[in-house]
Image (cartoon, rainbow, N blue to C red; front, side):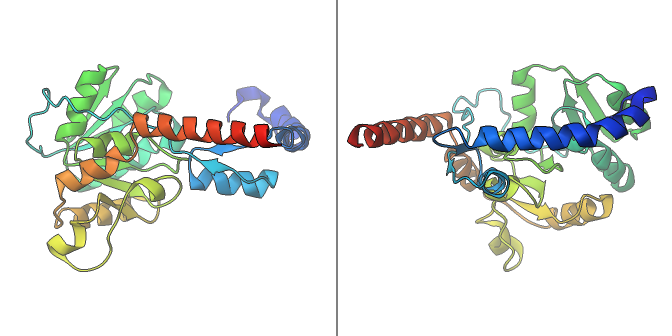
Length: 256
């Protein structure tokens, strides 16, 4: 976080403030009866920092059963969607695609200093789309060669939105992506990817991402398998599991 001319003061004050906030946060975290987590990744941090167990219920996405706007033809572009803020790693994507020369479409609703800087340094193979409609975004999800997911997230809904359209994902191999993207690292060619929904890159560097892209381009993916995998994370399933959990806890309370 940047505070401009107040940076020296912030560097002195913030550690003291954060220490007190952490103590208050830990105490407050002991009061709830139960914890729900949006991923195993988040559940592990709840255990680490609060010493509490939690139930994992994955968030749900809208499954696009109506595919009337999809062309059904994979196009020769990679896609990234998200807020243009530092941890989302759009700068990594720009650096990687400035090097590899492949077509990249970046979709964001964030018109800020970082967005304008990245737009300015992007080569002509990188196209930026600002504040487009949800329907336009869904069409891009459906027709991209692959969806790129470079940040480390607690969970991450965007890769699932891409997979719901049958589009494979190239993701940074940490955080919630490890729970949503299936990467089969055995065998070669079709056998290597038929039971996969994408693959991972191991470091947040242009070199690591470009190696994954090179690997991706010699692989094939089963679109229907990817769609079926994404359907496991539907909103309907989320609602069912959430209601089941509430009913289970109510029954436990009644039996006490």
